[in-house]
Length: 110
Image (cartoon, rainbow, N blue to C red):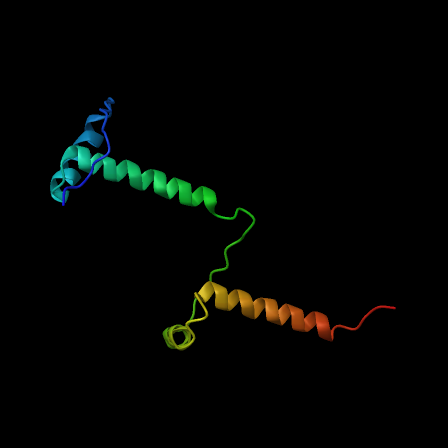
């Protein structure tokens, strides 16, 4: 079966010699033609940029270090519970439950 390819157009730009050399060396190691390699680089760049733009900007990162044993136990737990899609989902749900529980137990002001 023959692959249908999109039409192509030439893109020419002056770049520093050191960058040109770096690109050509990486392109040769990849085994791709220069056109294929540049298409890959530019596509990856725009995919990364698009993904970054789609991320929720109303978030903050929480990073913690766990012992290897606890980390492995967490992975095993997630394997046994495929309905939990990720560590992020698990931790988020635990925090929400904790906060909701505190709200229920808090005395009401009258």
